[in-house]
Length: 186
Image (tube, rainbow, N blue to C red; front, side):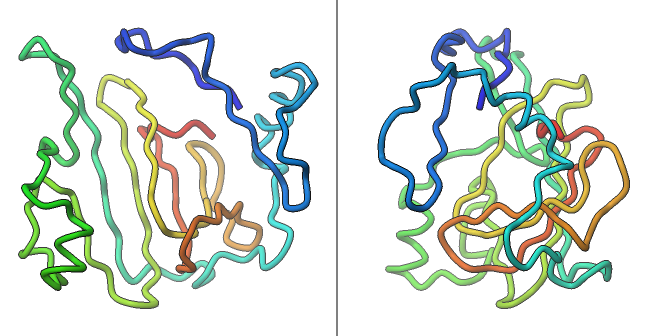
């Protein structure tokens, strides 16, 4: 897997942006082939299909919850500053997960808005729409915890029957569309 370098990130080492994926049962060892020998296969995302249960939860029906995330960056302060939905992230005094476990925080109004924490109902189908900056700048984005399906890329029609799944740590319903101004490519 390779990442397109971002010209505004002075800390990015463009020579060291590779990741190694291991399948169950594969040896825990570095690959011996050329790093870019399989890139073309990864670029053919429409050909990737899950091994089991390919249908996105809920089929083509509407999601129970839709979350729009609009990413933006500026350098007005002389520093690179990212915002989500026009709100800059600020670290809380106590980490979010610790507040949830220790203080039993279960409502969004108990957490700081700048933490960008969304409390979801159990077993809901959530549609996450991630939009990049208006100027087209792309930024990598990741989720912790859920299992989700990509049902639509930046181009092409939605596919709820054979949706590419990304398994993570916890079992959750999964379904996501990647929209035109998304930081994801594909």
